[in-house]
Image (cartoon, rainbow, N blue to C red):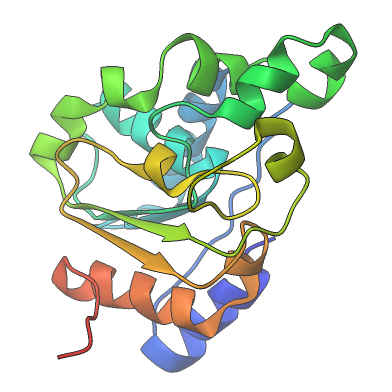
Length: 199
């Protein structure tokens, strides 16, 4: 998924990047959060910046919410459903969707959104959010969006109280993963704590 972003961050910015993958369908949110913490700690860094796409951003915030003494570092959420997700809520109501949605999705987005449990994380470290407004994806049929969205998540659903910065780019939910502009904005936020704006 994030291979192209990893390559750009390494080549253009000299970051050391490790990709973490998790069983979003099988694993519970707190189990995946603990696995992410262990994955990072095994690399023994002084600082750990985290970029998470979609549910991955929620997972990063969950890890930090569960372990406030974690390594210093900034967080960038890409198209993450931080105030819930109508597409996920809709899927959650359909019995056949259970295999697709799994356990982490309802836990992370339907029952209680990150906005309800991640407020103290935003107070402790810099969180930046990149949203997309190119509606390309199946979510737009499920959620019936009448507002800016990336095809899966509405821009309004990416808002997190206390976030340091938020920017909307012309990308779709999946398109974020192959966007040089998204990688460049993520790098800027990691370096300086805010996104690049045209003067």
